[in-house]
Image (cartoon, rainbow, N blue to C red; front, side):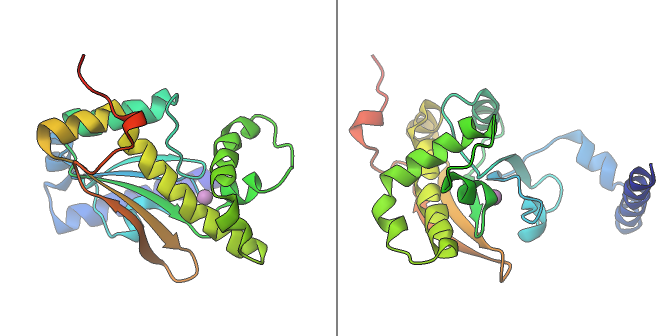
Length: 210
Ligand code: CO
């Protein structure tokens, strides 16, 4: 109960601060949203999407899951992606991973995590594809961080492979798709991969009209 009271008190203080800066702040914010960015990040509590890039409410459309995965059978992710691209018309999609990711680390072990195994299986597939690069690292932390980067390349690829993004590229020349890693130790972001609208897609994954 005390924890809950603390959260509500923080909320009251935050709302009061916003109103002291702009008396119409919430009234205006409630009208509509036109975010330019879709953020696909990890659920990790230490990587709060808005905060690390100084974004205000209304600036980011956000989806987070364990290890920032883009899984083609994930209706939650696909619904967020479709809404962001087709209705909000976002200009950029950012897939953001982070150093020391617990999900990525877990996928490098043989531990049975129960239901979570099903999710981590997607990461194990990324590991299999990039085993040489990951195994070239000598200690476990560097292996994890290498797999974090390889995973970003694969998940950005998965965004681009969707018919949602391919259609938007053809019709509207947007969005750009970015893979960033957040360095937990410094608080800084680093680009791993940038994909321009209309970039070449592996023909195996390209959708064409019948
Ligand atoms: Co993580």
